[in-house]
Image (cartoon, rainbow, N blue to C red):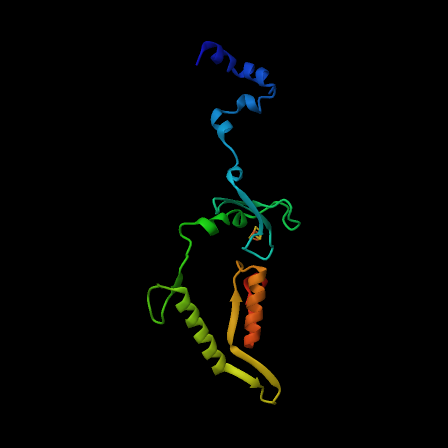
Length: 189
Ligand code: SF4
């Protein structure tokens, strides 16, 4: 660095040169800090969404680059959360990108001590077979006084908080149409 340049970099001269008289702005900003930029700036698309974790339903902005989520921030336009997210919601990018995210159906057979992978078609068939068999076996047409019941007490649903409104709507519709009456969600308990 030349002597003139070194001289100009003296703190007080830097403050005068940059107009930063309180020494809280550009006069004290390092080159490393100047080179930093918000990670959301690299995104090529931004989608408004809703945090999937709990029933509060905070608004999120999902930033993506090359079709990959790179950041999720609070949405200031949301009347629910006005730009805020709790630590869990602020970390929801990990729900998408975590290397430990489970992306396969995992199954532990009766009496097995370990889990194994199943393909989706096999898993869906197994679930359907069990639902049909259980419904048939536990179906109640009427009670002991002959009053109409048309229900099964052998099937219940307990949804997790990561289910969104649409999923809960469909689950409620499906289970009610099957005759189940015990349909709950973790967010309501
Ligand atoms: S988990 Fe947190 S950020 Fe997500 S909806 Fe609930 S309160 Fe909001």
